Length: 79
Image 1 (cartoon, rainbow, N blue to C red):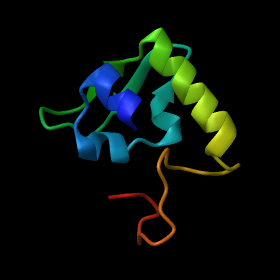
Image 2: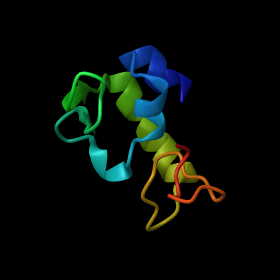
Image 3: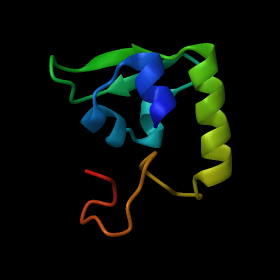
């Protein structure tokens, strides 16, 4: 979470709303569908891409939708 914020300056709700399908490693960006100023593509630094790939490989379960899921949320993610 902290690395995403430091590397991209994305807002809290933007980070918590990242779906795994929004991360495009091959094209080097995170799709942000609901940003304050509208939809955008947030560039991925090499460092952030490496951190995200390691995080996803270690912590994400098959079929998981959200990067930061929540078992107590009605929608299944942190927000």
